[in-house]
Length: 294
Image (cartoon, rainbow, N blue to C red; front, side):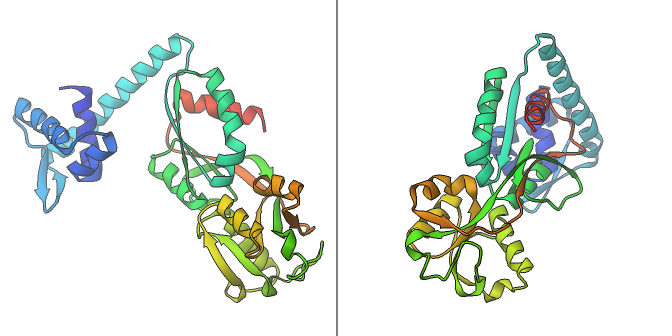
């Protein structure tokens, strides 16, 4: 019995589906099925019972699962110990971050991390804030970076930086929308917004709520899936938006956009990690680097 076969058995047990387990592990369905069959045939046991299109652990499988999980944990610990003896950090690090952070804040820090830890393979996925939270909860990401707050008490939230949101509009529409430097009436302005679940949208929602208005009273003319598409729509004169200074800084400097001078609170950037999942050496190295620069 190999460690690969054990990993396949564990994944099938967790997902209850051979095809999904194979996809998660980057294997074909036939390879995953063959691995399970090899264990069953070699030891003359039945590990799963088929229930419709899914599979469930047999009684033997239920007793074997903790042993398999323990073996994999032990093997991983052995590998980590051997690698630590070399003084180098190895492994794969799956990071997921919200758009503003992934595009404007994270790259420089990951470049520094890579220069210090060239043996670590970095994989970065860009999602909105709510989806980043779910990725860390489910374990598809080791570490997440988000703007604003999260809802799960299973995750630790570490403040790492902050950003200044701005309300901006195309310079050519500044006067026609009735905006002054320190005064804005959200009800008479057409808005370009991000999709639900976005940290950027959440800041606008909070601003509208604090203004004593209802979101449904706003004139939402466009809802777009990225900060850059929102910025370009505003430059084109579609309407106003509330967005990170990082995203619009160059457009402000060039005169394409103007911003209202309002005392909007800064938006915090957070790193999120799972409280119950022990960090790998690679995760610890990244966490340490980020915390060094707080």
